[in-house]
Length: 426
Ligand code: S3P
Image (tube, rainbow, N blue to C red; front, side, top):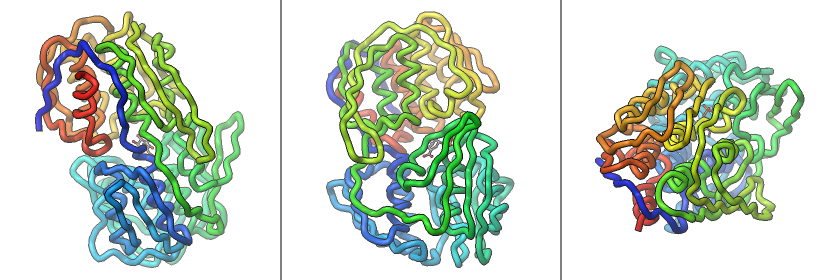
């Protein structure tokens, strides 16, 4: 599917966001091993969380979905999974594949995880390495999926320092620790998103050296009722679109505001953005609130180091903000971006250059000189949801018409993205 976007004059209203993808995966995975039923309200219809649900169904977990996006999951405890009779298809979802591998490594049966062509090129050695130290029997194909897991007769807890800040690797090891003898500790020098430890209530200790999180086989897995918040990473596209194109204000109610995810707010504020945040008083584990944004002139900033993990999924749209900011925006230390659903540094730089931006590519980032007018042309989504949406936002700020090829990639996390943009333009 191709999507055309024309430069915007009006961009205002209230947008409903899809539920948070990272939280949805975890809510479903954790509910499946709890001792009792869980009800998940506002569960997203997007492809990635649905891949997690279908893998869990293949593992014998009873799951019912109502027409109102409510999912009922009957957790069968730690011993509740059954051996799947076919490979578990994780689709495009790295979170499904990496977290589920951790949960399957210590099971008394063999399993295999597969993914689409993009997921099958992403690095899986980063989870196989620690799982093997725990005693798991795992084989990969040249460091990639398919991941074959053989029954190993028991895992042992380890202390593991993350070589790269990654919430997926951290979660994989901590989840394997739920089936291991002894304690598993994951140490992270630079904090990554903390949904797993929050939602499972795992013990965390923070020091000057970083953060350490523990899991073990006696940890109680909570069940219950949970309403999933709106996805901050989806909000990011609407925030930047409002700042650079059209009028505003745009209201975004019920957005997840977990501080390990909202680094973009600090970046945009530093660029001069006017964003109002109203946090809700809530007893839920994940903080939520409402955002209101107005069009504001932006200026360039330098982003690097410890800031990167907290904005990792927002970097393509930060580049777009940089194209409309006065001065130069420089982003470094983000080599990890080359291992996402596509090489997001290459995709972002190539597309923005096609639109006329002055952008230099580095191994670990880019430098973009803003205020060089963008002119609509045809760009590719690289079959990556976040590249498709970032280019949609660039198209709103560009002169003329921008065509995004393979624009259906948005279905992975924000299937209603193009409709949402169109409504805000009306
Ligand atoms: C995610 C963690 C991040 C992020 C991904 C979702 C998660 O990946 O890019 O979209 O839900 O844990 P890494 O942990 O590999 O950085």
